[in-house]
Length: 516
Ligand code: CAO
Image (tube, rainbow, N blue to C red; front, top):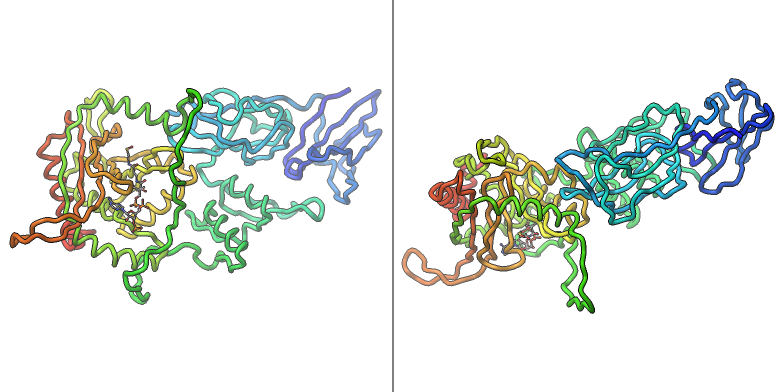
């Protein structure tokens, strides 16, 4: 009895595989469906499957040319699918979800699983075709980089074996024109090139969506997951989904012809709020492994506490900004952007950093070198259902307030569903933590190494203050608590930076005048 050869790409994509048996010089070819493993076709007495004219007719009515098959005895092999280095020094990940089970047929770019590192979540996809034979981990297990995730049975001729990709880069998918779906119930991806990720392709297939109908808003028209979800949502609600010829996303530019509604009603929240707190009653002690983002916190905060922190606090009179924010919020709403105070805090920080570049810097582990960072990649501490995570907004120095707000919206949306990617979370150069959205006045923020400074923002409160004539007035007051690496930042620098940041917030007109 000869071995079983796994299918080539075309068959695998259809959920089919082929196998042959050779007994007493007689070769038998079978095409089988893994999902419903009944025998579809049986061709006795084939001595050579290389015969170009042989055609195998499936009972379901589909023709497949036998020319596509190459047969050599024992043409299959079992390959451990290794978790490749996913960069950023990540050594281990937690398996969050499996997209395959043992016995499943996978084709190139099919999602294998979703893993979470201590920095972000990543979809692991296959680059070759085969049958999953073994899963090495349960959900929530820790998987090590360089060790197998799954065993896949592949054809010996598959020269792509050993390669795997993560869903970070968009991948061009498309089928050659001659590819057709099997059976009337099957769905085929559109022909030609579509730029998207494997996860998007999988969702599209599950929901029978023609990706050509979906507006891609990513770089060079790539279809992002949000685009597809938006399309699905529109389809469900019966609304017309944006088509590729019409922009699907709010264009973040100020257009003078658009009427700006008066700053009155609060817009509905774009992101789901966290569930209300419930008392937790534990019958007995419970030990839980520290994983995911919490693991990141252990590492970075342990490292951070080796840094001598310098603390500096002040209060900001936000009265003028509270008024202006109402207008900005209404303007942003026209563009589909939710506008809180955070974009102003972040943009003002960037403007102040331009005057104090030593605060937008990083130091090496032994603190022997300091690198002044060209880009202001400002991190914002984010409270998510997965815990604290600090994504950053890249190149704030070149962004408008509205663009900063749109980016915060995007990061919050991703953060709320554990979808932040490595690129969102790495490369920060300075951090702000707005704990005031939850409460509190002062904080003692801990620097996120290798950065050198961080600010914690308190809650805006209405408090009595004296005006310039000595009269008591109602003011909107907010506290700021800075921490800086005292090995490289002196108190005077921190105070001067804070004064400048404060002046932008207290007199927003000065900020507008100096904004580039
Ligand atoms: N004081 C009072 N109200 C504030 C505020 C402050 N300091 N900052 C923001 N708000 C308001 C916002 O304007 C918004 O009100 P509107 O609906 O009227 O606009 C509301 O609070 C909720 O804001 P938000 O949280 O949705 O958005 P944001 O941009 O202000 O903040 C983010 C985003 C990510 C910073 C915030 O959601 C968050 O996670 N904060 C917690 C950060 C944290 O955990 N820090 C500790 C780190 S150390 O463990």
